[in-house]
Image 1 (tube, rainbow, N blue to C red):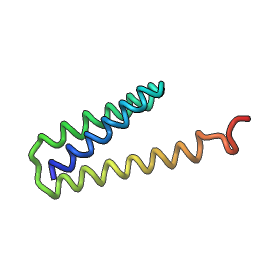
Image 2 (cartoon, one colour):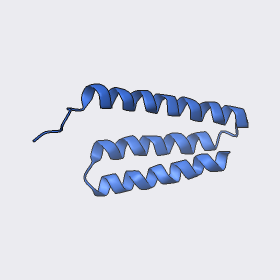
Image 3 (cartoon, rainbow, N blue to C red):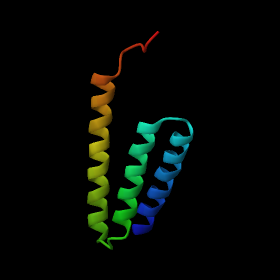
Length: 80
């Protein structure tokens, strides 16, 4: 399971570099923070159950944040 968190940190790092190259600094910072989080958690040598709990909490926070952003922060129809 720690290896899967290292894989997650690799891919979030790739997305962070692509966002940085595209000029999306806030997105890049969010993905760099996720990279550091996943890499840190991968070296903690926790039990399988704890890794699943951490990943479940991460997904829950992501879905709540994404739902809030898409429901209340995005302008319907975009800006024209």
